Image (tube, rainbow, N blue to C red; front, side, top):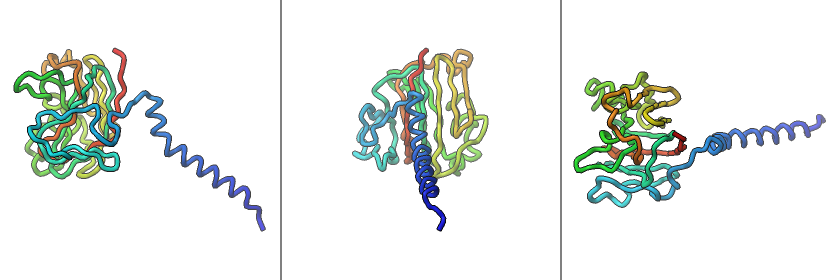
Length: 222
């Protein structure tokens, strides 16, 4: 019979390599200074905005995923942020609509978070409600109402999509599923010049369900 010890050693080494491969993303995120923004159980550190009587489970967690029911309103951090990199994944149903709000300052009466701060659009780009009916700067990955995405990177209904959004001073960048699709110099963009440079981060609930996961932030130096 042939010796089996080398095979056992190979299997053990393969198992160790697999464990490192699984753990690598989490280790990289920790090494890069990213901090989770949710604890996976409740909304500690966040607060509901623009809801009169939200359902008790309007925003809830299931298997570590933040699940949002149909509604109108948004979820805001209690902490303000100025310079940062925000990473998150989102998934939306057919004709779904949502958004990520950035640097929203204290709002005056009737002032909206996407005009006082900035919104990065989350949308079912292929939905019949939107195809042929909206402006280029309203599709997923856009700096909403201002900068259209340079590429269509939306993966489709019920698929997970990834944003990496960087804000440092007046510079802003949106990486959508691995490619930069929108960028702006706020000082050189009239529509953004007067927007806040510091404020809360928000997740929008805009008439459809939506899901978020792996929401992480890294605070940057000016």
